[in-house]
Length: 317
Ligand code: SPV
Ligand code: MG
Image (cartoon, rainbow, N blue to C red):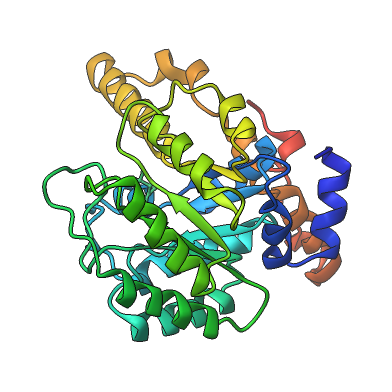
């Protein structure tokens, strides 16, 4: 989609409506991971049409493990900052729904209150463990999980999407079980199916897509099978690709590097050219808007006017 079409859409439609527009399978869309306000802003400015509020990334940024160590309300507290800071639709990684149908109902209502566009629920039991930690995954009973999907759909208070994610292949169940589960979740009202895989090849995901046909939109998360050419997802009729953890992993690598260098060099001089400038930060957070708002709203006598040296255009860097 062109930049101007995207901007027009954002002006005219709610995040929930925008997400619905990304789901048809005649065009491949992309959602970029974000885990806080600034990473959401950066993803939006880079041109992404949707943001994945990753459970792994948000937990990691909080210094916690992706095993429901953060409560759903703590996660939503962060995601609300992300939604406030951006216009593109945010898909909340709702894990298992943090319990049963009843916790799902409250989580969905509160996510709608925070202007989140959709939620992804996975068919495991609470507390979940990140899908790539092998040997400890517990799959939920399919009928019970379908009830969680129905409860999620019944709890929406605005245009919203519910993604049902099956972990059947991740835990080593058969392709036919994965398809049966997806079918049951689609019948329960899921707006999209996320077929997850821990394999380094996309073969099982693509074979799922082939058998699935176009029963409802399909979403994939190519974290482990990252070398698969994106065109193969397009050819398979996938609707949405989630780049699930690449901002947090980029941050971890960058922060590790900068900390080690500053500690070693006992100086910040060497890294100055390798990190974001303060001007970049002022620009990303639109400090100029605050300065013009001050000029408009903050009644002052001439002597109280602030020096405007922190305006993005006027920094001394
Ligand atoms: C997440 O980003 O938290 C996900 C995707 O659920 S994954 O870690 O690939 O399971
Ligand atoms: Mg997750």
